[in-house]
Amino acid sequence: MMLFLYTIIVILASQLVKLLALFSPKMKLFVEGRKEVFQTLKSKISLSDKTIWFHAASLGEYEQGLPVIETIKTKFPNHKIVLTFFSPSGLEVRKNNPVADVTVYLPLDTQNNASEFLKLVHPEMVFFIKYEYWPNYLNELKKQQIKTYLISGIFRENQMFFKWHGGFYRNTLKTFDYFFVQNESSKKLLQSIGFNNVKISGDTRFDRVVAILERDTTLDFIAQFKNNTITVVVGSSWPKDESLLVNYINQTNEKVKFIIAPHNIKAEQIQELKNSISKKVILFSEKENQNLAEFDVFIIDTIGILTKIYSYADIAYVGGGYGNPGVHNILEPATFGVPIIVGPNYSHFAEATALVNMEGCISISNQNELNEALENLIQNEDIRHEKGHICSTFVQMNKGATAVVLNHLLNENLN
View 1 (cartoon, one colour):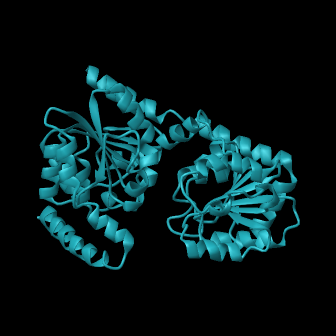
View 2 (tube, helix red, strand yellow):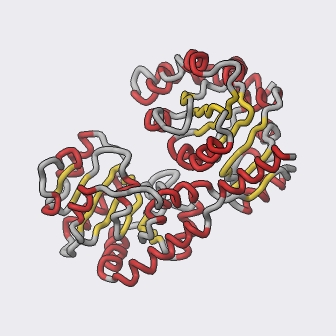
View 3 (spheres, rainbow, N blue to C red):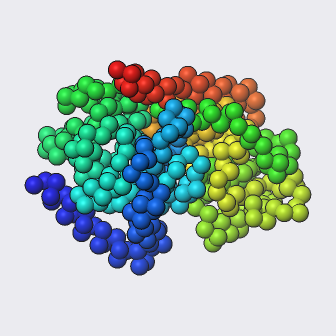
């Protein structure tokens, strides 16, 4: 009965989303992108193909699962990799990724969609990355006895699984063959409701960022702008972050440069940010035929290069810490051994909490605290190096989650 009611709610929600799509470009992508999914699957997957399916909610989960996807692709070279996204912010950015043979939106979670999707994909193994528990898909996977895993899972006490009235949600967990979780508290929570098919693997994002160190992160135009000057890289900033940072930039006399990569790169917001800065500022889109070394602030009004830019940072400010759920990915600057500053909302993220506690990352909550943190890091090279070393060591000590998952799968297959 609960599953029936749930499916009715999903169907009603799908009609609401179609209405919202008339007013929201993102919702339009959400709706339009799902129209051709089954046709795409029919054209790209045959009955004779062997497949492995990975599902990511959005871009962050894709990046998190990428080390496992890449390794699985190596270990199972005769299988096609099918990758699904729930959100347009994941699929639209990574629809041309090099690792999956087929990348599509996940059709909404109805019984008919789940049945049709699995008939076309017929996966041997399925991996859900971090979270997203779709009851109809999971029930169909269980019914067809398809091996289903959760990787880099994280659980919290306030989730419905752990409440007295959460029986329907607990039942969805019974469909998983194995849980690979990030930490001890997640393991204990699962065990408290009777699940012992769980192993602490850690977070595969550490493997993802460690792998970055083996790649070429050279950007000649960033090196030209930096010009051997102390550089603060501001990643994934929101207006509140930018307001505090612009106040500092406009009043500081320090010999320091800033690279700002906003979370939102809409033209009007970028122009507003540029106009608020009194120092000499240039946009990425304006950089051609310019002597970048002459500028104080470089605003990156494009996507896809922030990771490489972090490799040039002496100090990183990672945005999102004034919003909900909080700060964006701090592991990328951390892997390059860069001290990090974040806003006050970071407690939902274990790696941010750990690095704040270890003092590799500084949390600020107002203008004075930001000013003090920046002044201290800019003026004191020893403190910069000490905090940066804490960050890089933390990343190196926590890598290896992918190996835990793969060792389990290979042993399982051998047995």
